[in-house]
Length: 266
Picture 1 (cartoon, rainbow, N blue to C red):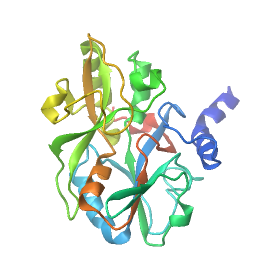
Picture 2 (picture 1 turned 60 degrees about the horizontal axis):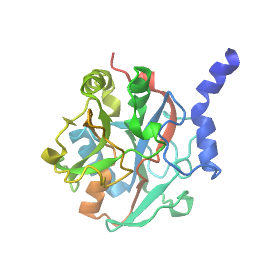
Picture 3 (picture 1 turned 90 degrees about the horizontal axis):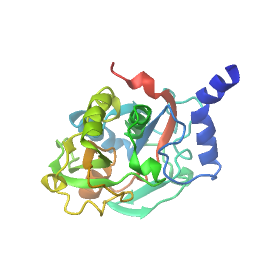
Picture 4 (picture 1 turned 90 degrees about the vertical axis):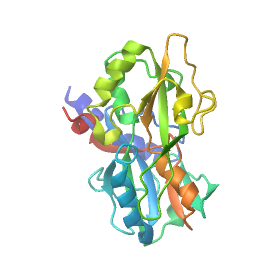
């Protein structure tokens, strides 16, 4: 039993080392069950204050879990053996608002003025949904979660502005009600859904064509359920066009050593 507890407790380290070695470069949903996963935004220090204000003004899509010291590739509160430059399966590199590369390591791009933000991820509450018997379709199909840009504007702060991005999971109405109850307990990882059903009402013209991630089938007795998504900063980056920044690739998260249960509000 002690060995099982030790392995479970070290799941984040094990997966980060696997990713760091180049052995895994795909979506992280379902990896290290029980461990908190995080979105990542890395910006020059000159933009960090405005981004923090943007995140604080939009806590549903941008719940901040940790902020690094300028130039540091570490998040000590999220994991002792953690390197922001190497421990995500895939990154996105942005120049003047344009996506220019999706590397698996950003060590060669690192600068002394970079500040990193770890933002809560809905992958963390999926464990609670599955434990309650609710199917999470993209995990069942071993694909990335579908994500969509909406017509809902975020609250602007400093130079940052842009639309809310949402992730979607199809559910039967009874499961959707239960999912609202479950995810409401996790405000640090987006909390309750922001919209149920009728995707056109939030600007989604074709539910079968997500802006990020992979489409999943929605059965006749199901509705799409939408949560605020940590890809929202990438929509803002594309709009404000900063000279340089780095984010996670959608679905490819930072796996921390925190436990999902530590984020429950109840």
